[in-house]
Length: 170
Image (tube, rainbow, N blue to C red):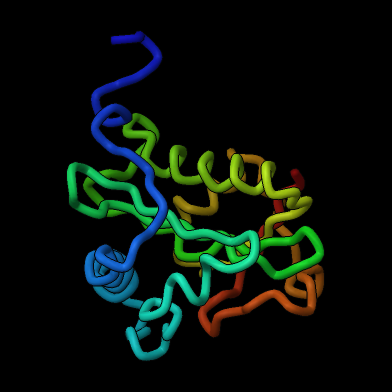
C-alpha cells in the first residue's frame, strides 16, 4: 500500500449519485441536520432531495456520494447556476467518517473541484450555518474565502438557515 494513503481513503469511494441511493442520502443529511446540530429542517423543506437528478445533475452540475461498501457515508453536490458559477450544496459526512485522517470530506471536495475544472467553472459559492464550525475550518483550509451575502450572484440559491458564505476561485 502506498504510504500517502491510509485505510479510510482506500475503503471509501466517491461515485455519482443514482436514485437507488436516495433514502440513504436523505438519512445521512437529515440525521446531521436534525439530530447532531438541532437544525429544524424537514425533508419536505428540501424538495431537491426527492429529485436529485432533476435538480443537481443538470447542465454542468452533479451530485456525488461517498460509499463504504454500499453504505452512503457522505454527500456533495455542485449546482450549475450559470455563467461559469456553481453552488456547492449538500456537503455532509457521517460523524464516524469525519476528520482529516479519514479524508472523506477531502475526497468529496476534490471530486467536485476536479469536475468543476473540467466543466469550465470559474467560481464556486456556498452557504452554510454558523453552527458548522468544523466545516468553516475545512472550507477555509481548502482555499475558500468568506464573503458577504451581498457578494453572492443574484441566482445563488440561499437556504433559510444559511448565514455564512464562501467563494472558491478556480
